Length: 553
Image 1 (tube, rainbow, N blue to C red):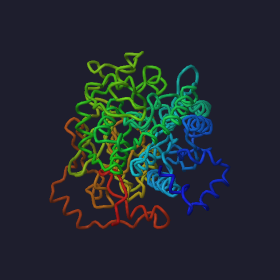
Image 2: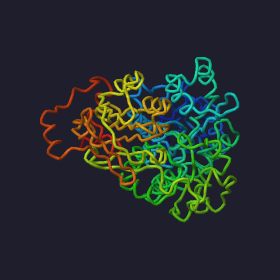
Image 3: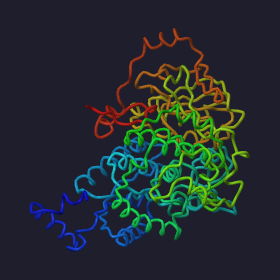
Image 4: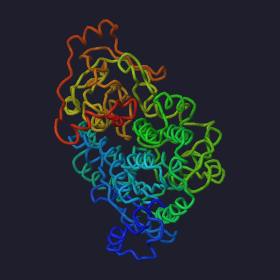
């Protein structure tokens, strides 16, 4: 066992003394040591219920014949960090999480690990660590939140609070209703209720094979989630004894399956950052073009929030990810999962109880999958849009640019009524390097939606979007402005053409005009020039390659 390096031999007398100081018995010392990375925190709703799940993971590890050691990993709530300087830290925290897990696991020579996670950057950060370390690993996602309730209708965080700002500005809702929505939208523990980034990544993780079947959609408050936590504890010890390391599961074919399920669900565009980054750690190359190719061949069969009508609880009761696998079986590789079962076997035994929540391939919500990759003279290296969240009227759009060098500038213009029908809002210097940290633009996109402008105004950015974004919002424009991408030389009144069916995004400028504008352009000073974000900005790569940190060797 890996842990023998800290507990066997004469030279390990001091090590054993320190281990005995923790309360472990000599008999337990002989068992596999399992590290449990937990991102419990009091401030993230998706994580506040983890203390309960920790108990069940611990019980499972003991039952399976291992010995658990818990250690903490930080978690940032994207919703709370949204719309202010705190969002600079969200994406960069992904790299910190991967590095911290690597440090703890390697320093203490654990034999295997359970990763207890739930929200936006925490799950991909933990998956990156699993791929990098290549030891037996199981991921337990803590589960989605129940829908809120107000005056007989269901509520979700994004559609009913972020978008409420725009509705309030229009006078559609009053103070009293706004206050009631605030307190009712999020009724308790769990990740936000739609197919936003947290739940998208949970579904990706289960499909990838790193979670037990049913884990992604099992509700945070359910006994089912407790049982999955317990079974994960038992199973990790079996994986250690059988020598099934993470990269035996995280293969190129498994990543292709994960992308296909993502496309069928209409998931968050953030997966175009996270899946390539996780694959990179596993030694697998995943390109933006692969997302586009798989999306073209994958019908969108689950009409999930934010653009659709169904909540994660609906998907759970309709059949969960096994039900999605059943629909897609003919398009999926038969890959291994941590349960020991193959993907096709899970698909064969799945049951679908609602034919509208999980539609057949012959009756999809959209012919293509969730994400489209657009290229053109604005985004030579690519950009992404959640095409299933765009109305038919806005799939092709031509408008005049309104250019802003930060999210804050754009929000002021939106809230003051200075954005008109036919505008294309351009928010730049918000990329991985320029942000730094590639902030999510949920506040402007949700306000636009709430003001009823989703079918008359588009938004493009070198930043990124929350999984809760809907409408013609094109993000991840690469190269970003700070690196001299063409978005840097756009000006007010430039005509911008967005053609999602043709996968194009262009400005009506000739190559010569673009080149001439660059003669007068110099990159601005970094917005943040101290601390972690300053170091991050010097090392981070393009969004088109997953915003991974460059190897300095």
